[in-house]
Image 1: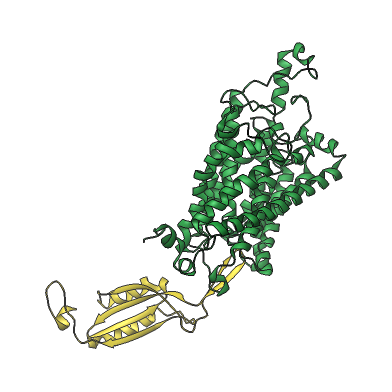
Image 2: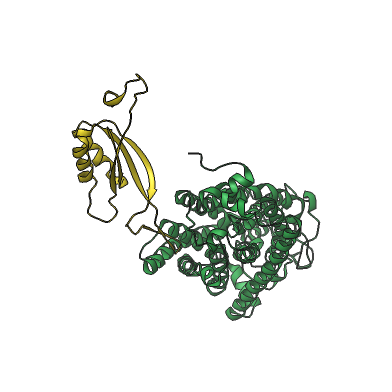
Length: 112
Length: 452
């Protein structure tokens, strides 16, 4: 079992959601985050005072899948969240020790 | 002198048309007595009184509107403390005005400060008009209308000291200011005995008394208070909610109709003229500021539009009721562009006027006062003719108007420095570093504006 963490542009959530649906991946957690990477940040202008906010808003997606699905899910997220501009984000994978479904107590792949 | 035949100029006098009509109706017996005995006060007009009562409520609404306007511009941790700076004065100044400062502003005067004849509300008739000028509305209503101006004026200053002033210190300072700065300046300019009033200084609805006085005091107050820590550390200071600010600006525009057109103190041609010039000045101010921003920064912003309409309204305040509608557009446009440029002063001169009270109300108020002298038109208001004659022409009027601006600015600045220092010595003015960092909403008031 692998947890996929994807940091994506906020407006591309629907596109990623749709791509995951097509792969029949139905579990996902979405978190509002702010972060910085190689993009230059966002310019704000208030009464002539210009600010560059280096911590820019992004969404963090957490998706847990079986190991044999990791490759295609990562590729699907990458395609759906791609614009080609600096700041498109990152996708990380983390191997998991255990997964437990709270309602039934099932463990492992059956809990997904 | 008989107030009904003296050619007078400003606010209490801009209603003279109605008393003249009343006199004409009474007939020749009274007219022949003029100059030998005081004439009977003009009859109370129901129409004028209704308009002034509506205007009074409109001006009251401007203080919560200001709370929204300012509240949206500060960081989210200070939204409540900033809004309370406006709201709290509806409490304190209302009481102070009834008990003391109405009398200091409008009581019988030697020219500098009013007597105590109306103190504690004594002698303010709910039936008869204000005794020292001809008016067609009850004195109690006139006092209430003026009360709303007295509330919003110190509240305007609060924009400069936002995000770092102790609440107790703020209440003490603004109470002292209402008594020792607002009341004298209102007396000089609006009391029929006031020394600037007698010199023919024109201030229809408060360009000098309200905007210049608060704008200059804002500068003195923020100098005493010092800069916010975030500015010293070059942290971004982001507005929590510009939509709130836009709503506040819209409500200010709405309330300003009562502020300016109500200052005719009657429902007559001067009120309509003031209504029109006020409205188009707000429109032109908004467009002027946005154009200025577009040329300087490449973008027209929502905050700029909101600021520009307020700047236009500030500029037209002394002029409304004295100028033509086209002059209203010109004044609004000049005020919008000028204030857009003036808010840069604080960066050059290194004072922390958090929400640009100096740039908008100080500069806009001074510019409006001078433009009033230049553009005042006798065909709009016969009082202008009287003012021009008593000053020996346009040049004299402009000179006295500038003297009025400089005197009020100097007095407000020095008095505010002293009052802030006194407040500092008694209860303190500046919050602690911890309070400022955590935000004043939680540390001073025990609440949060947003628990979402």
